[in-house]
Image (cartoon, rainbow, N blue to C red; front, side, top):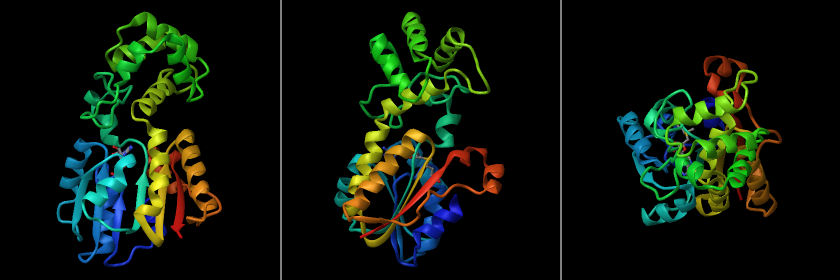
Length: 282
Ligand SMILES: C[S@@+](CC[C@H](N)C(=O)[O-])C[C@H]1O[C@@H](n2cnc3c(N)ncnc32)[C@H](O)[C@@H]1O
């Protein structure tokens, strides 16, 4: 939703803006064009490998861009250490990027074999998806998988525990495929895969931590735009943004979430579940 995002952020020439999820740098480039040579973009990401690509993709951008390796939970601390004051705006486009799914060795995609990793930051001490699958008790694993609404979580956990050690994405998906029937278009391992990704990266705690820091990151009157891609993520964003609004720290700009136009969904199928929330800091 690039056009909607840029409109919502109301950037002016000379503004400083935080891109909390630099990814491949697509949004960072647009932000840079909007703030121009006298502005500044702070392009942040938890994934150092994404930042290398974002930096290459943003070469020749209009404004200076500073690339910072940081999880949301340490954003304020990282920006303070870089002597960055309150920004005029912030964008967070949650989740994973196409690069994560297309790179088999990152272990995110059922379509690309690789080690069962799923950590957004491979330099972190976080457990990999394989660590969780191979160490949790069967009931804990079933409960974790159930958090995404996967009703066959017990059968999936039982099959994974019997197949231990599970080390690759190919093995993970074929064990699940053999244990539970395919219904509809979705691969039966899809929700289990999402549950592991969310757990490995503490995704919900991270989103909540980002929302809590917003008053210390963006000046009063500055805009914040958050984009989510699945219902669990969106619930955390909805609850967090409503909470800071109720505390008088921000104002919700739209009564309802913004969603992509049918034309954008036609052009980019991956955008179909995107939901955007806009805030103005008080
Ligand atoms: C959907 S992609 C962003 C795509 C980006 N807007 C672009 O135009 O290329 C989400 C990005 O958020 C990053 N991310 C996810 N969780 C994070 C966290 N807790 N802290 C910082 N970055 C995070 C991921 O590494 C990924 O690069």
